[in-house]
Length: 231
Image (cartoon, rainbow, N blue to C red; front, side, top):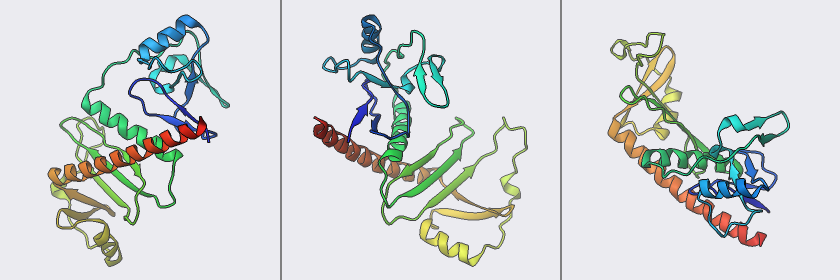
């Protein structure tokens, strides 16, 4: 099994041979001057050889990326963005993005999906669909939406929402997946929604990030072991 890794500083993205999921990895040009810029901009470790000098599409301006039906290429005098230390919030978002792409490549037979979609008025954050590999855990769909002033369609006022009788079978399935002591359920226009405190949501998110860190460490270990086998 052959792995190819992005050598841009701080990037953990890698590909397994014959895998077409995730980003495209570009090999460096043979031009010595441009190769030098690649190394300087990406803060590449000096021990990385010319054959290992690969960087993923994330580090290049989209204007220099040409995509056709059959393949994706770098065009012109393409060089990667200069490396900048990420702020903590951006780093966490990038880590989640990388984990989602790696899970597409290294999948387990027991996979469950947790979807969180939260719209917050204060900072207009949108958080994400995360696919995680876990065992013996029910699928949980959490959808909270607050009215946004940018939407042309008027959002419904939550005070006008009335609870509708729910299907007993639906309640039975939700009891196992949702902590009803912290999360309230209601129906609106035939769709079922949940509502929770910000403190409880942040607790759930912290637990999810902790699990993702464990998965990341596991994947790094797999990557290191596979790299040793390649040698």
